Image (cartoon, rainbow, N blue to C red):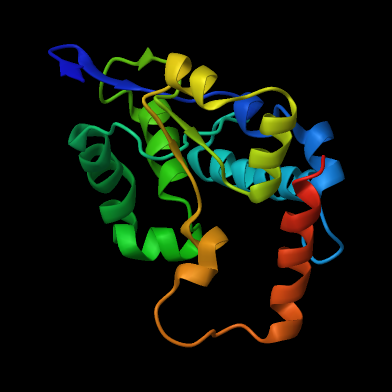
Length: 186
């Protein structure tokens, strides 16, 4: 995934992340944030990082994981920004907890490698409403297989498979179970 010119990487203006926001609204229960609230949070985080790097321009999503990274970008971030300011990468991520944004903004700022943008390799469902919305829009195993190497689902969606006792109280588990049961009929 890398040649002499640099590594391939993926990012966009949150288009794939929010593409089905309007469909997602119907799958959101009263106990979680709406897609619009997630979008506002993401734009605010992007603005903070752009300010930190002195970049003006569009907001980018530098994921989803898994991603392809080059150590040259991390080295430039450390040598040109963090170390001169007496910071470690750990401390930086504690301040702005998105290693995806640290990497992406560093790539744009320092041009450590030649950028070869590509489409995402994996379909990443960050939230269950995204899965339900894309399924309702016609996404199937077959369309996934044609367009992606695989799909990434959140492991906490299947809390029933967790070993040991349930850590979440019953009142917090009921809305998710009801929402999943109702989603079968949409």
